[in-house]
Image (cartoon, rainbow, N blue to C red; front, top):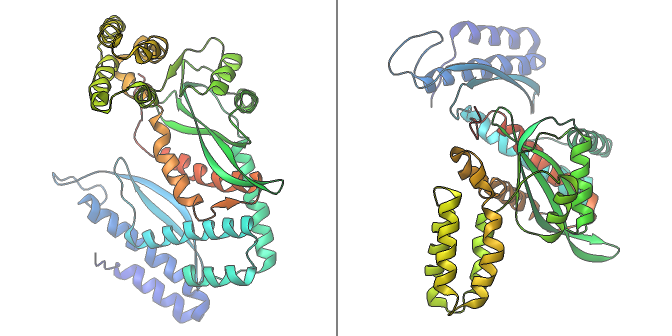
Length: 385
């Protein structure tokens, strides 16, 4: 999109360069870019500020400050926001990717021991920047302090709690092992989703999940009405110990996947999956229990192991029926974690094997912190009122 900056702003920028030479270049760029973003927002909204017309797509909603490092110096930008849609200035998209690549390159350097010389070559290619070993050390310290503050930040009341884990390869005592990355998600009283915490542990044993959950409570987590997760034994035991009175909802998605292991004939897998899905989609608890009884009776002779498994496990997914129907779609699974896991996988595959649990925790924290902060500007995830 071609954009013309207002003559007054253009003149102001030209005067700065004329008076200060290259020293005024950064400030001139700042003036031009901020004005260009205002013009782009107006074109995106199809309306000028305070203009009333039928073609308007959305409304302006203030500004978000951002510091941008360039070859001519640091530029302070005021990024225009809109109320409910996904506007972002087009010229910053490349800058955003470069910023993420920069963070990833630094993180990879921290965890892989890459030389400053090699990292400088990468950063110069990506961003036109160079850094010294002193700057690297300072950046490492500042990053660790920032990530620790985020992991230890105070929590408050959250209505729903979601728990999930994934695994990353980590070097420990000279061996490569799979460490569990434990992540907690919450829905706050405004219906917004947040990532509450992350921890890299040696496994999903009860002691690790319990320590993680107890830390959330110490930070102020309270008010949970329902906890949603898969049925890992260590996690279930930890939830029972830390939140004994909180109802537990077993993830229906994982539950249906587990059912496939008990279907003896490949030709009947689809049929069984449809029967289980019908149970989950029932209008109320009584109907779900009726459909479960019919399904058990249908398969008890042909697949007795399946029916025995269903009788014990399927009811663990019925907790959702005790909550408002408009909440059930969000509460029935732990799918809130799927997109996050995809992003973690995309970013951590560059490292492949972390040299320590601490280095893994550093990079994963940076990723989920970025995602969680982005969620704050998203529409309401679950309407609670």
